Image 1: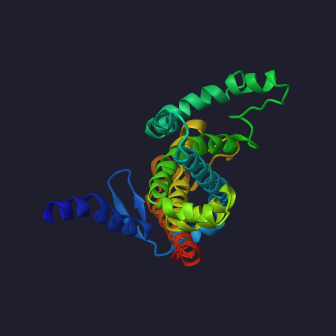
Image 2: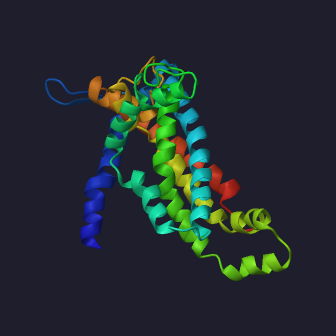
Image 3: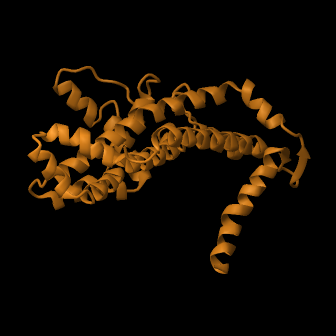
Length: 278
C-alpha cells in the first residue's frame, strides 16, 4: 500500500492541508512569498462580498435544475434501452458519445450552435419561434449551459441506471403481470423503489459535479462570468480570486466553504433519501 499512500499524500492530503493553511493567511506573492496570519478574516469577508452571493445563487439555480433533469432523463433513457428495442446497441453508443467527448470541445460546439446566427436560432426562426442571444443575454446565458450539460451528462448516469435495471430479476415483473399490473404500475411500484440506492448515488454524484461547474462557464464567458455575472459560479470565482487577483487565502476560504456546503447537502440527502429499499 506504500506507493498508493505516497501518491495520495503528495497529490491529495498535503494540498488539502496547505489549502487549510492558506485560508487563515493573507499571502503576498510578488517579491517573494510571505504569509500573514489573519485568522477567520477570509471567511468573514465572504458575507460582505456581493459576487460570492451572486455566484452562489447562480450555482444553486444550476444545481436545482440540472440534477433533477439529468436524473430523470438518464432513467428514461435507461428504461427505454432496457425494454428490448431494436438496435439498442447502436442507441447505447449514440447516447454515450457526449460523455466521452471533451468538455471543452462540446462547449465550443455549443457556442457555435448558440451563436445569434447559429443553428439553434435558425431552427427556431424556421419554426416561427422567438430567437435569443443565448451567449449575451443574462436572462438565458446560464440556461444555455444547463441545456448543454443536461444533454452531455445524462448518458453517464444512464449507464449506471441501465446496469441496475439489468440486475432486477425478471421474475419480479412476471409476478406483477400475473397480478394484473400494467407497465406504468410496474415502473412506479417495482422499478423506482428497487432503484432507490442507485438514485441516491446518481443524485449525490450529480450534486457534487454540478456544484463544481467551471469549464463551461469559463469558456462561455472568457473567464469573466458574464454577461453581467450571469454565468459566474463559485468555482469560477475561486479561479478568479487565486489566478487573477492573486488572493490565494481568500480563494481557499471560498473553496472550503463550498466543500462544507456540498458535504452538508450530501448528508441531508442521505438522511432523507439514502435509506434502504422500502
